[in-house]
Image (cartoon, rainbow, N blue to C red; front, top):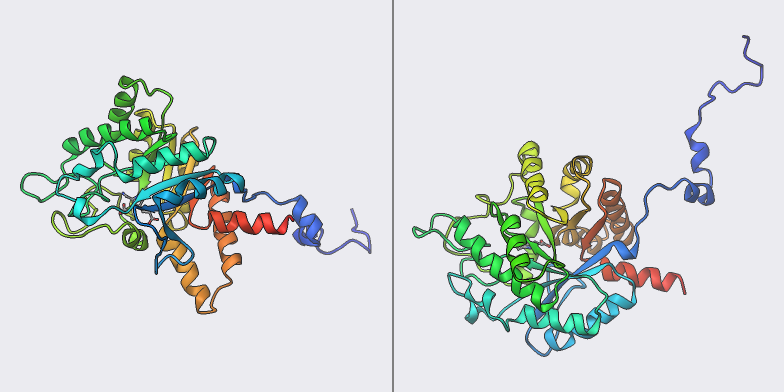
Amino acid sequence: MKPSENASRLPIRPRRLRKSAAVRALVRETRVEVSKLVQPVFIIKGDEKEAIASLPGIFRIPLKDIGTHASELADLGLGGIAVFPKIDPALKDEQGTEALNADTLVLRAIREIKKAAPQLPCFSDIALDPYTTHGHDGVLTPDGSDVDNDATVEILCNMAVLHAQAGADFVAPSDMMDGRVGAIRAALDRAGLSQAGIMAYAAKFASAYYGPFREAVGASQGGGPADKSTYQLPPANRRETLRDALLDEQEGADILMVKPALPYLDILHELRNETRLPIAAYQVSGEYAQIHAAAQNGWLDLKKARDESLTAIFRAGADFVFTYFALAYARNIAQNSL
Ligand code: PBG
């Protein structure tokens, strides 16, 4: 057939879908929703909130203010709160004994949060790094050369029971020991806590992006292996990561997490196709710090970089995101909708 004189030489023009804001909104595929963002919160015992130099806009919150803080997050419609204690260094020892103190800071914080904002999902980290003098996520082997897997898992089970009893909706083992999800599930069930969920840090990499977090919780360094690479995943390995993450599903995890987020979107995407469980992604401290640092220099637009990074994480397949931007994002949305 002879093409008509008027026929465009270019019948397929994708730009038709981008011609106006209204059309772009119609065809938009991915949205960042406040209810899908979880705010990580650092907790201290003291009276005054403390700024964290490497995490602009993020503070260590005193225990006495944590209830009010949780209420604000709930009122803004955020998806949850994740609690991380910074304890008095005098309470740390080689075994992380303070983690099993039934009245330790984080347990008091969880109780306050559940009192002030009972509907706000509360995630609590299960690992020993805030409590050990060497800063590792578990206890060391007798010769100090490595983290002792099975001895650590036993302690984490007891820790998880305490956190769930205090009211945590999901305990979140972030330690990467073998077999900890199954052991924690069994311990919770034995303790009559079958409703307490497990969000496994399933694909957690030995990453350089945790630096500001370690400052925020005052994680110590010294003793044991030089870094966490005997338990956290190697950034170079895709197959090893998927195998390890899917074990957490088999062991009974309710939610799988990928962490960090932006450097590991391929893993997030692939895991999305391998599991029917919800997947969380953690936009970690270093990812947040990076955007802020560039914005402070005038090199990036803070809000645009924030929104683009979050959109990318959802597009790759996250159901929800742990992000230090959560509260600021929710406040922005609330202001704009006034
Ligand atoms: C503790 C834990 C870490 C983070 C969350 N839980 C640090 C680490 O594994 O060294 C990092 C979170 C962040 O960087 O924002 N195991």
